[in-house]
Length: 333
Image: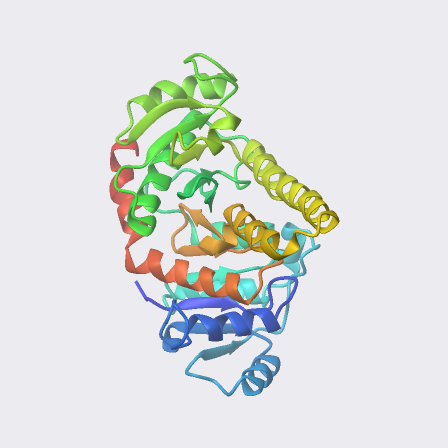
């Protein structure tokens, strides 16, 4: 597998500027990622990419590929993928499929990215449905939630595969030796929840990973597990609720600090809290199960988030995460 990363320069609210700055930051000798610039393939409007690089001191060694089309953040993924075969995300998928890159990073339209990657790359051997894995740090330790929206109506065996894939990802990329797996449910007792959850429980219990049973929403903040497995519908609701409620509460706290003239010390404390619920700290979300490393960033990603996403994709490639997933799923295939 190639160790190169195809970067969708045109995807995201602040593209292409934030994406190019993020690529430069990821490869800076002064940063903590220090990715070799030769590993990056920048795909997008070639003229704009060259102009932005010139503004920031020149091209440090990136390969550049022109893509004449862009899929906007508000476009219908299915329609856009059919209408824009030369969009930057499609060219990124093409680079991975052809072997020119081992992975891709995009801060663009999530649905388009998932669709393009799933259809264009296919799934790993033994994988039935890919899932979006988001990592947060709610309790001072990484917590990975899967699935966050790729599969809204999974079957029980899909949830078992999510547990296996997330466990391997946390071990290989985040250094958690024996991740604890929890099944998101409405109660801790076996036999709770929908029929899918009831059927998944014994399969998870028999899986080749450390299953700790059902967990409730409150357990996301208790450190009860390292991986939370759920369906894409629930997972997406949970993720958006966490992001937006945290922002809402932080806004209230800021107003209170201003009213009490305590902003000098309060701003630093609130910045730390904000980072704990921002998955861009880990670089974005991995689309686990597709035949290539795919990192999906938030549309509002800034330079730092892009750099982290590039670093995450490099770690996943260098750790051979996909090969280990295939090996780990053999018993469940």
